[in-house]
Image 1 (spheres, rainbow, N blue to C red):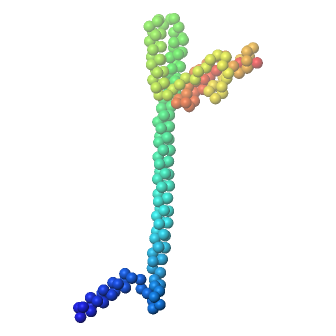
Image 2 (cartoon, one colour):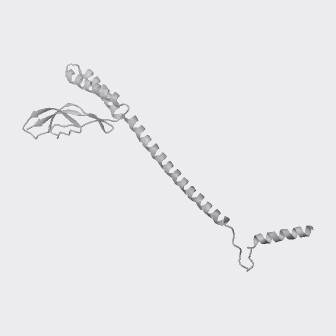
Image 3 (tube, rainbow, N blue to C red):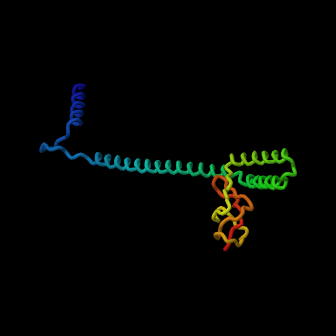
Length: 186
């Protein structure tokens, strides 16, 4: 009896290894489980591609967001001290007025001391990104950087700068105070 069981098992193994044939010698049609598995596999591959594409887009969005935030933070840091620098510009103006009013009366040492303090303050502000707007007499008026406070009738060209009344400044390339000037008028 053990021999019969072993023989049966061997026949079953042969049937699984060889395609089953119908009576006419043609292979028997398989059930649709193979096609279903292929369809399921292709569906899973499509889902995988969709998830991968979504992940890549999300990663790119995150990187762009980080770059934008870094730029915003840099701008905040760059201009965070703007109000302090504006106040210190007024101190520079006061030093200029003090030096002019001293003239020759205050003594050379006092005048030199004030000038050196003023220069030290200006150098510290330059290190923070402060830049003076260059203005020269005869230069054409530029409303983007200058503010006209008076029109003076002259024989020269119209809209030319006659006098700089107050210095103008840029902070890291951005206008924080326009140069106040008198301009010519025909």
